[in-house]
Image (cartoon, rainbow, N blue to C red):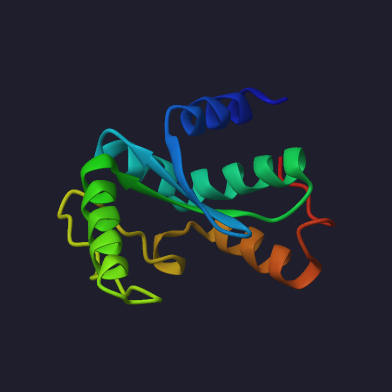
Length: 128
């Protein structure tokens, strides 16, 4: 395993998986800063590749701070307990979380890699 993938694995292990869907999960970290790191486009691309290599399927994740998780979990439980079959949560409003918008934040190389993967598929593209 390349050294950068070991770092990716270590950072993912620092979080706690708190909710799981069919092909996605929510991972909680103590700080918003840590969430920002694991949600950066470059890091996420590596982590999703690592998950694919080890699990043999495509998965996605969302990282949120522990305080946001507690708030959203409570909101969900409260709605569910009053009879809402499919609770609808309010948007996350945490000024410490940074949202990367995608293409505008990518270097020319990263854009080329993304376009190549989109055209040829993840299985045919090897990034070094």
